[in-house]
Picture 1: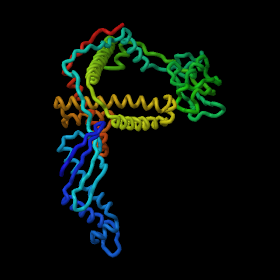
Picture 2 (picture 1 turned 30 degrees about the vertical axis):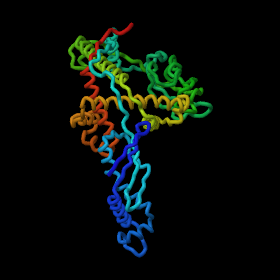
Picture 3 (picture 1 turned 180 degrees about the horizontal axis):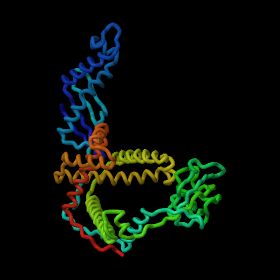
Picture 4 (picture 1 turned 90 degrees about the horizontal axis):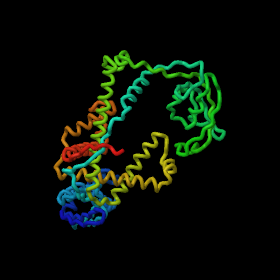
Length: 435
């Protein structure tokens, strides 16, 4: 086998591969025998027809294609390895010249990984703003804990306030038509923390048990349902119950109820410790992000448009699936975001950023000889199992049917190792936040 490389634009390489006549002829004969096994030729049993008859029956081009397809996987793999090409796409055959008895010439196109020029990525001295604990954070945490253990008492002697919860029936209409999904029975609505249409909860404040009334609202312009965007609507409401949240008293008995504490001071100490742990975690994450961003920004790489286009398509497919789960289609998102050109430009920026991150991580891993070990992959399996509440062996079975997902998991594991390396080899100083 003889291989000649021709470098093209955007990291595209053409491999002109010449296979000796004898090897090509043997592949052609094997292709004849294989095809003859499953074609019906009058007067011959399958696999017994002479070569000339098979050629006449199916055509020589079909046999040549079969022969080339049988030769190419190992041939291309050997050519890539011999020339030390870092290929990132599936090789494709662009042309061939095949005449039995002569050398077979095949041209294969591959796309290689862009070259990355790293900037400084070790020994950096960076500054990151500290994430201080807010003065009222401890009290807010205690207040939230009290709210979680609150009880509700029925209110019968006053109208609903914006701090109450009401149980209602509601039925919505827009432009004279009933709103699909716009009704509910015995629905519990927290008037102070409603995610309903703006103005819905506010108009219930001041109403009492057994009141029946109508409210008028307007759907937001960015609402996901095209028919309802910006449209006025009327809802018929009936109040069944008004309930007031009653907070428990903050005392030692409450502390003992919510955790392994003896006193309120023990509870407060635990809250303080939790807030400090959260602060440390935030500072650690911000420090890692600053190191990574600095290293990425310092690196230089020319990303071929073809790579960006493929990543944009992948992102688009991913977003389309996610939107479908929410009952939103791509066309609706396009309109909401001001047109497809604007949305695709956003995806292009995201795609470019992701590609550069991946290329730089791979370059650092190669430069520093950072390699994945079995324990790194097993750690990712364990994380997935915990996330989805599954056994690790079940995760392994599912990944066995999804090699793309397994590849993504391996890349994530490598990302983690490189990030750990960068954190260990750079310094971050926490500084007071700007006022």
